[in-house]
Image 1 (cartoon, rainbow, N blue to C red):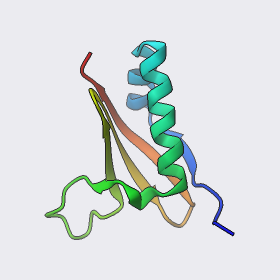
Image 2 (cartoon, one colour):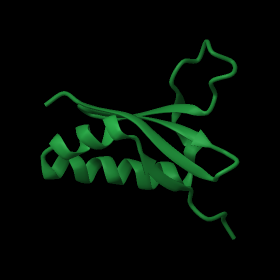
Image 3 (cartoon, rainbow, N blue to C red):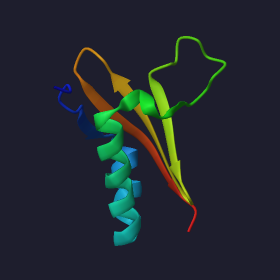
Length: 86
């Protein structure tokens, strides 16, 4: 049995970026976050030179990128930034 997925929280700046996206791009963000909630460490570390920053991850699909922080004690992800180059 696999562990339950992580809860997803969206920071205020990321929520503003998400609201400004076209519907298909926002759907892609939620698809990325669904995958991240199931396996947060399945995405690469944002800054590989930062040994203490292993819980900040970066997911990119085409023109869309999502940066999130894994909060281990709360079993949640916090979306820090969403960038869409479209």
